[in-house]
View 1 (tube, helix red, strand yellow):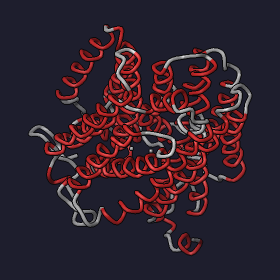
View 2: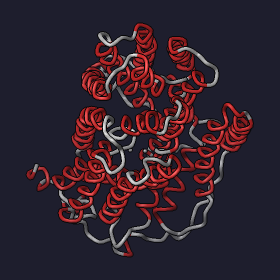
View 3: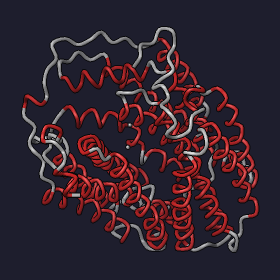
Length: 499
């Protein structure tokens, strides 16, 4: 790796002054910490069983907690713009990483102070995720910098994925073990806090980043005139009408509130494109966002992701079934998560080969179709069969996820890669949170049986396949490595034009 660094011309070295090895270390450490110490990974089972067994809350309250606690991940594009445009203490990456990791670690310990107070626990979790998102955004920025400067996008991306997979295998096992212990100042909060604090210390001691001079954040002579397309306003109005309808219905009030919050994110993004500025980075971000708002291809792909990820989910409902009806121990439930992540790794290797043999249309159809079909295995869910079902489930889930991520990458306009992909990941993350709330509401409010929910999940997932036929053919009728699809399919009034 040192030889690779020496072969890079000085003119193409990143402005940070870091070597490829230094980037690799911090991308790996950052990816591990921000995956392992999330409320949705290490904290998922301990928090679920705290709310269930200690606070005696129902499935919907648990699902709502995991809708709002990680909501900051939907704001990742704004965090990216902020860290790029406004250096902190002279650096764009180092200072933000230290600050984010330090405060995330402290807030994990604060969460341990409120095991008996749902509101304060949720507030601390929301704040903790805000600073973890900051760390993740910095890590993503470093990954892009390294890939572009050293010509190693595949190697640095593979490193990130491998490290995240390792974190995903270890965290459910530990989470299952910790779930059987008292929450408070327990192993859960201390291990998570220690992970983030270690990230802050490693960054402080080892990351050497050149300070950003004022000339590096230049001013532009004139900001171009950026208009918001009519379609964006129509989408916001339609979303507001739907959110109002859901909010006024007591049974769907939480879903409506969440949709209002998500719409507010898009309003902030639109408002950002209209803010007068001469900061070259901000102007560049405004131009990118304007292009994204005008890309029909991207929004069709985002709609596909939204439809797939918002089907009524089994997550919290399954955890309650495992604990209350089937009497699984928390450790056994955690081990099932480990099995899912191991078989998911196998699916990732298969997809890397398969994507070069088949076009994206069939990858999506087969991935989503197989996922819907194997969801029906949960109709005969028992303790002896659970490891097999979770193994198949982890494999098919990753297969579907990779096909949809492939769609997201191909549909992002050129020149807007990080921002466009981040926006689609926001849609994905929001959909996952809503999915769990919808599934638990069907059980708690409408008294739908678990097996009926399985049929609903499988049926609605399969139904989304109809949308595949509306996706642009130039994007999905192409094999990996066989030419290059257009960056966007545009409308008559459109100009050619991000974890």
